[in-house]
Image 1: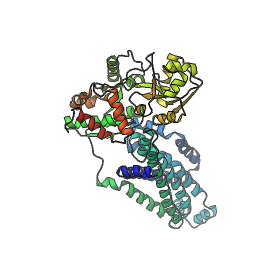
Image 2: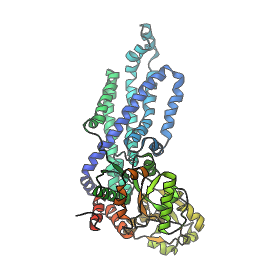
Image 3: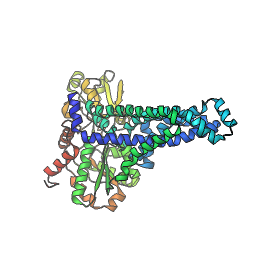
Image 4: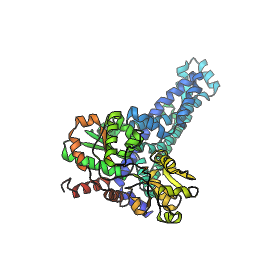
Length: 508
């Protein structure tokens, strides 16, 4: 418990910021969902033949995985809060719509007949009789939607929307850091409970105040969510640099920012932890970001859907550079020295127990080995699919998991082998053994800025600023910097600045 409070105190400023972001996104989505669902539900009570297909359609929206919805929205709306709010609104529609329709439908028919007999038309009957009586049921639907939205908002951190999900993702990336995960998860749960209690009060008063209770709720919610926007918007930068999940991308984009701002008059904004390759690449193509650090091998295999024509680092870079330019109109600047290639790693004890030295040695014990692979590695041709073809492997059990959970799984003995990156910090911490790759399955993976060509044309001075890192940063240096962020809990910007200063790129 003491360790948890130490983590909270160390991240108190960012914690408050993330709580506010989480609250803001959730309330905006709830307000929009309510403004759509309540009028639509009222309309369906008058057009009952449309009720079943429309309510069914909103139910289908809830069955679609939230991450899939976010990924689908990126090409149209980019990254950040806009696609997050759209996705969360879609998830919040069903409870409000269904309760609005049901609440009106279940009003006592005798009261409707009495109102009609008094000369009330459909609109007056709705506003004076049906809606006030149905308000507690409608408010119950809004409560359900609010809890659903607050919980789902944590996923929005994967597309740069912010919120408490940032802390959860950081904890997962740090090898399942329980304290960081709890620092994001507990407040999210408390926030959902607190908002539910507030909405319960509105639900109780709605029986007396009727539609005014809903109007008051929406006005208050809108003021809470949108009020800060009146006092200043987001700072507009000349360049926005994105990054995948992990300490290494975070360090690299901070280096890019420091070099660009040192060598040019441009202002640079950063978008960290944007998920895996597909999400970040989609953001680059859409234009939400101008560049991000990518690896030559990933560009060839995952983005160009091809195979490396050589294992020579220079030739692989040229192949990636030409391919990205021709197919996607993207520029690959010069790569750094370190080669963050894939590796199959195991503990020294497991290697000795099964006499493992190469990937091919796994074939003799494939039924006894449990593998822990990321979803991306499990599906890649330069990953497990290639291992099966080149080495004739068919491992008995493969467990797919988030990249941040691999080291915890192998440390606890839940899995025997994992996919890893050559510069991962836990390779030092756990003293893992890397199995040789005699068939050269894994091509070179050198990191380099991948950017939109129109950005480079507009700001050509970026190229000279970033190419200062060409051929710089060894495997050991990158691994050590990752270790400082992951295990010493240093800030990526601080680590990046220290490297650039120590190596003469920045003045002290």
